[in-house]
Length: 315
Image (cartoon, rainbow, N blue to C red; front, top):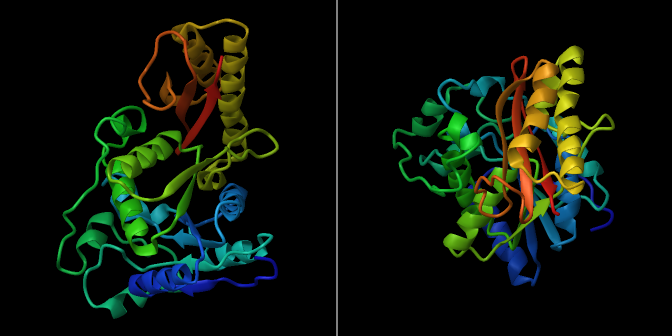
């Protein structure tokens, strides 16, 4: 892949599928990295991971309206498509295609899908109107019924339905051999893995480790919305997770006491917890005592910004 420059940009889903099938007919393998744009080094690490698993790499940039609840403002999601392309072009080895559709829920004329080829997302339109704008409302949804219920699923009840559905659509359009997801969104990664298993997708789902800034904060597109003071307070998340892991490795196996370490640290820093849970890594079942590999999952608000983080614990 050495020597590549600006990636090919495809906005039409049929053209995307045609490109993939043409490459596969030449014996090429394809990896997909799904994103919502506004890329940072965490996203670029997913691209580098994808390069290890396939000969060609496709990055999708699509702000999915179906995972936003009515109370969540789709129009505030950050976007910098031109900047994203520059960052992707600078990745060592480069990528092959950016799939940047206008609206994957629009079932009108194919030419409509070419609109917005140089912009991001939906230009601030409400999610509901995006799902219905063609006059033929989208009504088919994919759900992973048990894994989606806890944690983020409690506070964002439509989120995983939207994620599973759009990832299914991307898989059906791009037809990759491999797809790479960041483990920062741990529940999402597990939901997608279970969906792929249950629906018999022939796709290898790779989980890429969390990338952190030098101060320990997990990389996220939301971090830019933190004030300097809020960012300092948000460092309590990683500190609390590290303390919890160390305590477990020293022999503290009570999940109640371990969770208290996280709650106290974050609340003392001024954060507002959405949840703090210790769950079995694959089933995401809440455990009371650590007897097998688990993951400590946290979602917390600092100001108006909700941050996710986690840390796997293997005793």
